[in-house]
Structure formats: C-alpha cells, structure tokens
Image (tube, rainbow, N blue to C red; front, side, top):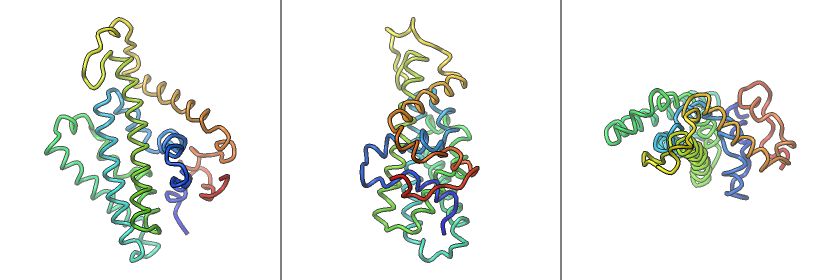
Length: 231
C-alpha cells in the first residue's frame, strides 16, 4: 500500500504512452499544483526559473535512482522517512554545488531551493521509485522534472518579456513602451499561473472531467484515485 504522496504522483499517468502529452497535460505544476510556490516566486525572469527548475530536475533524478536501488531493502513503514532523508540530502548537495559554482543563480533562489526538501513533488517521485525498476524510475523522474522545468521556463519567459521588456537579462527595446510591470510582482505571478492552468485544462478537458479532484488530492483533502482510473 502506497502513501498519499505516491498516490498523487501516480495520477500523472503512464508517461511511456505519450511523452509529449504527459509533459503538457500531466504537468506536475499546472495539473497537480506541486511546486506551485517556487513556480510563482522564482519566475520573475527566465534565469531564476531555469535555475530552480534544473535544480529540481537533478534532485528528482538522483533521489529516484537511489530509492529504486534501495526500495526493496527498505521496510514499507520506513519508506517515507527514507525518502525524506534522501531528498533532503540531495537538495543540500545541489545547494552546495550551486553556491560554489553558480553563486549568482544561487542568490536568486532565496529560501525556495531549501524548501524543496519538503515538497510533495520530490517525495512522491522518490516513493514511487521504490517499486519501480531502475530504468523506469529514471525515465519517469526525468520526464516529471523536464515538465517542471518547461512550466517554469514558460512562466518566467512570459513574465520577463511582458513585465520587464527583456529575456534572460537581455533588454528588448521594442517592448520597452509596452511592458506591464505588474507581471513581475507577486500578483502578476498568480495571474500568469492561472492563465497557464486554464490553457492546460482546455488542452486536457476530457480527462480532467473523468478524473476530478487533482488539487484536492494533492492537498490531501480527498483520497487520490487509483493511477489507472479514467485512462
């Protein structure tokens, strides 16, 4: 029997069937709202968005690899503490690496990189990897991380281009008179986030109706449906 974290993570569906559709319609941020806090806080520009996204991708892959190798040796009741230790350990390693080699990007992360150690996105991925083969665990965690990076990159690009008239720190003079500074503020993050969620819902409307309660399940307000339900 798996935990709520693993059950919610499974609701992304079988990625091997359609990797493109999984990356878009099953996005962990825009479909399950996992990692939504850094998604809105660190997407004022493309560089910080890619920074936290790539850090998350690395933690996902490494923690999934370790848990897939150790999963069968860890008792069922000890899996959650084991996942916490593994994820927190890799988050600390990534923090130290970024602080040493990418100090400018690390400075943009604030507390949000450290907060990733207690994010359901990583726990779900790590725990799900306990019962999967090494290759399957790596593939699934990589696709989840890649879709997370994609969502943050899109949000960061939209907010920076239209809010600051620049992209990756490079000014776009032709947009200077048309920029909307509101988009770089906290409220602007909510607006862009909501618009992208609406786009995803339209993209995958049929399945969303067949599997209601994504956000509620992620928050633990309702029981997560079985992974294969509605597919």
